[in-house]
Amino acid sequence: MIRKSDWAAAYQEHLASARQAFGDPPTTAVLVAYTQGQLPAEEALRVQEYLALHPELARALAEPVPESYQAEPGAPDFLSRGEIQQDWAALQARLGGPGEQLADAGPSSRPRRAWHARNGLARAAALLAVLLGGLYVQSQREVSRLAQELREPRANFEQRLLLPDGGRGAAEPPISLPAAADHFLLKPALLGHPDFADYRLKIIDTSGGKSRVVWDRKGLRRLSDDTFELWMPRDFLSSEEYRLELYGIDERGAETPLAHYTLRLPPE
Amino acid sequence: MSDDWFVDLYQRYYSSIFAYFVHSGFPREDARDLAQETFLRVYRAMEGYEGRGDFAFLKKTAVRVGINAIRDKKAVKRHGVVVSLEELPHLAAGAENPAGEAPATPEAEAALREETSARRRWLQEAIAALPAPQRHCFLLRLAGLKYTRIADVMRIPLDTVKSRLHAVRHTLRDKYRGETEGFELPEELAEDDRD
Image (cartoon, rainbow over the protein chains, first blue to last red):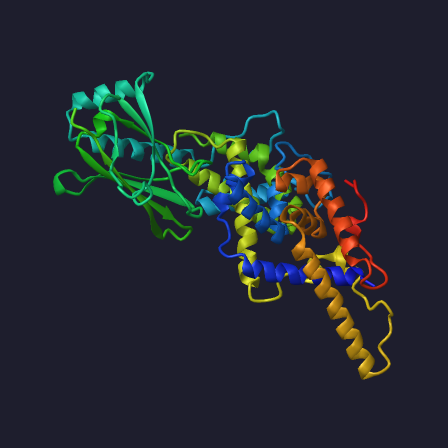
């Protein structure tokens, strides 16, 4: 006679042995790509096998994230206003803010001005300083021209997906950017790496055997297709060869080199 | 960059993100931590970026945070028992000795153990022998997922889930026929179209 307890035991034993035999688990990025239908059939089947063996992950992936949710008071998924305030204070502390209270407002009223607006302004000022500093080697007139250009619509730009060095096939030529475009939308792709808390990109001028960092920025946003977007005026890339270096930064601030991309620009 | 957008995002969606984690099976306090972690990541991702976090980005971040939390938890357990009966209360409910009494002799106890072990081996082999698409649906159903959730996870229509589980039921019954008397399917497979 086969009973529930037999099923429970057989299920556990099957999970234990199949999990051991499974091999390397898919990364979080691959799991998310699967939910968006972006994987080839063979890889999708492997993810399905993995999810069948890890039902708690399957549950988290299948559970809808409600855009609007009203829980009943007393239900486990209900948060009181006090708890929301408490969590807001904890979040501020983790972000290093001064701990101002979240506005006690209904859904229709506007929130109080952000607690860290001053930080935001400071960041914006620093950003501007870095941008201007990078361009200061050129004339003030050139800066003004570029600033003006940044405010105008773009009509002539080239979008280019950048595959990492070592991932472009046996011949591995540098990535060549067309001379004709005024601007580039560069999309460095990050293949097969887990998520990091933050990312950093350095642009290094490597023309003529030199190595000079011309741009260095943290806070890059990894997009759902595992690329980053970098809007680049052609004028910024005045040398013939550049190397882009991408780093992942974990919660403790430790950096891991993830990929690099060699770019070549034909002389104008 | 003004951070008003972040306050707005928090006010609009914090409860929803918390509810998502609770519905995904996290204890309440863990769900609060994970909801905070989600907003923290969104905020940090937006630093130095000329944009604002929207719900789509928040949602994707929440799913990633959830997956990572489950994996971290599993990494801690990796060297222990993989799935405990507590995690399968719907199956564990029937985990009692069917007779409810201790065997009379050591020989009878050994025979009972051998019989139980053979039954479970048979079931395990039967699960492993199922075609992959049927096995995936069956394992998720045994884990307690609803038909609709299985359809979402497997990215297949609900009717396909039903037909695969129907096929599993027949395969297992046919396979078991003649082995010995009495075959009780798990409750999760007892009906065709629940949920």
